[in-house]
Length: 371
Image (cartoon, rainbow, N blue to C red):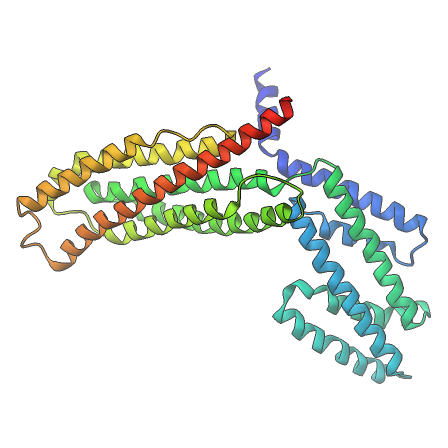
């Protein structure tokens, strides 16, 4: 029973990926069946297109479909025009047309990667007639038809078969990022009094960078879904901007904590720094859990109290002159740390507000479903 439960939990944790696998399979089979029923020349391209446009979320599928169709139509028009307007009668002539077809479209695709399908389409339109003894116009029409069947099939499957909305994925991605920021913050502040594991910190920082790129991509997909009214919910902009600012705060704190504080300053600030580290990390992880579950925002009052205690300790250190006589770079890092924590405090207040908005949106949706 325990083994079955563990297996179920593992599958549930990967339900987004499992849903994508099912959608891709259904799209490929449906595209081949439709292309065969319509007697298209190369059902292969319908199947391949369905695989390309069936993405992790509906928003990403919309973008992939738009880009692939635009590239295909443009490539078909250009390749067909080249083949019709510049007739050839030898292999050398065909090679010349191939260069004329590929070079301009490859240059355009290098500038705008969303049109990369144009180059492939132009080559197919140019070369398929030599294999099937068809004219270039028919080849262009066939190519557009095959891609249209695959694109429409993939898009319909993305909508109907276990649809995955980017607005739901963004909750999980944002939560993961907040947890990584909490880990990095804890490691950085610990370095002020006991040193730090730089290898571990670098791994965390690299993970934050990769997670930030992924979050921005999902945010774009969520806004695309909102634009065409496929999903509702709060604007993703404030959430993304707040997390990005927290990421910048961690970077600034990292620069201010390159070396431990002087021994006498450590003694005075060890307690307040431990409190700040514990409370802020707990708040970030609680906010991550709230985003995942759609629960209410965690209380931020302990963060205010911890940072107030730290500010009072810093004021006492300065009053007692413990910073005087320290090297300039040490004093600079000391004051930079205080400024960075102050900035982080403001951004944590913004996070509290944003998580509250997402929680209210989740509660409203649950209420509408209950009605």
